[in-house]
Amino acid sequence: MSRRPVNPARRLADGGSIPFVGSAHSKSRSSPLLSVILLAVGAVLLIGYLYSGSGKTAIEKEALSKVEGVVSCTLEVQRALPVLKKAYGDSMLKVLHVGPETCSVVSKLLKEEDTEAWGVEPYDLDDADANCRSLVRKGIVRVADIKFPLPYRAKSFSLVIVSDAVDYLSPKYLNRTLPELARVSVDGVVIFAGYPGQHRAKVSELSKFGRPAKLRSSTWWIRYFLQNSLEENEVAAKKFDQASVKRSYKPVCQVFHLKSYH
Image (cartoon, rainbow, N blue to C red):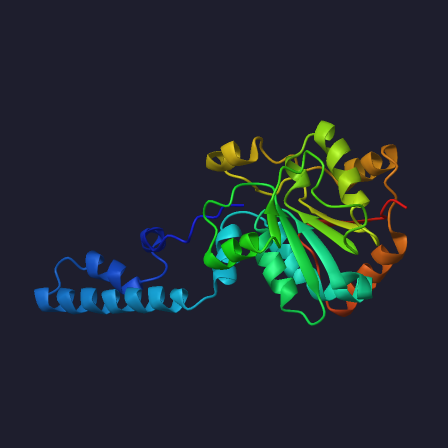
């Protein structure tokens, strides 16, 4: 779940982006003029590459940096939004997203017609862009420790979507967080969780997350839900599966549909 921007220097070191630069070094006996020309062409290509990257939106850059070497369930939520709309219908009109990089999900939801969206960022926002800082100032996005009660009344949202967050919680804190997510929702909770074996937080990020991701199997999650009286939303799960087939959508994360508390 790295937020580091793509490093052009590293791409060059890998030898993939600017082939002309590598060829200039390999032909040490070429004429000085040819070497200068090749280096100049390489510089022009590099500038063009960087310029084309600068045209991406902040959300696109955020998403690209997140998936550099890791699996991002928050990015997966954005891919799954059309399928979620088919499965949940009007329940997608008032949504709370909980997870890292929530600003990217909230921004995308707010672009949808007749959709209200809020977000909870469980970690720091030191590297947030201008759009994200604006969402925080307006109170749309909040920074909150999800191991404690959420700052919302019961049934404040029609649907709660959580991603890249519960994987970092021990069972002790899951026992607090998941009931809270169910408490503030009306029509259910959708959890996007990683599969065992997927690469997640790097060593340099462990200080932010507090612990490495604990990627659990579907069997573990289902047993946990049953032990804690969290019921599957079978109707929504079936609609989600049907919409996924029609759209040829295959999630890279596990997706669980839970009922709210009534």
